[in-house]
Image (cartoon, rainbow, N blue to C red; front, side, top):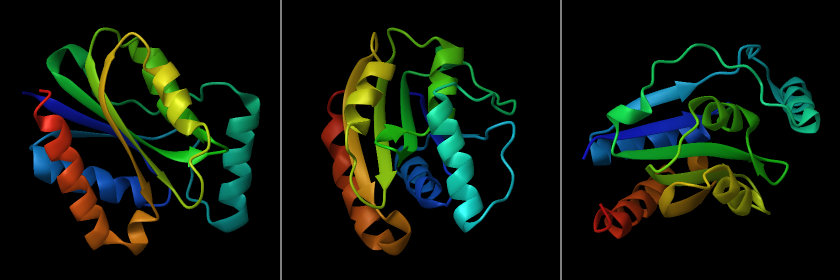
Length: 160
């Protein structure tokens, strides 16, 4: 089964999970970047993220190479921003018009997931969602993340 991991990460948490996933699944990796994304730290990064969330618009993305028809399973990864998946993931899903695909998703966060799971389900409506997971502070718990991912992948491998 040909698999892609499509993710957005600004602080490295989502990237850690994505890289562990591709090693477990022998998957292709597609990292998304917002078109106006610049290296930001601390409060500047927070303000930029708030602006994206409050605008409720899908931000333009930098070009990426992806053909959803080439994949049997697409796994999405996003940080939780304001109880929602980060806006660049929304942009990607809207641009590709995914429908009828086998998909899974994971969220990374430093606190509560809130309604982010429900919002991801809404974003992926019309697809076969086979699994979901969330990871609390992956960068501070890389060994725990590896074990959680191994268990998660075993759980949905039977559904493939």
